[in-house]
Image (cartoon, rainbow, N blue to C red):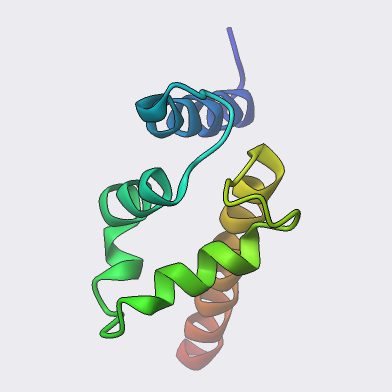
Amino acid sequence: MPSEMERCIESLIAVLQKYSRKDGNSSQLSKAEFLSFMNTELAAFTKNKKDPSVLDCMMKKLDLNCDGQLDFQDFLNLIGGLATACHDSFLRTSQKRI
């Protein structure tokens, strides 16, 4: 039986494959797939962005080899950055309560 962390890793891989399969390449997200992923899976993060070019800018910053695709490492950089931001926000909120 997989641990909670192992299930989380499996889930990250499954989500990437779910969105990356739309254009036939199941290991990388195209720009359209990235936008679909962000607007569906991370809608809480994107709905507050009034400028639609924010996601384009994110894609460019995440695409480290500038090939117009996000590979698994790029995807993990996105998830890690969001997790770090959420963790920092949690810490700030917790400290205000004390």
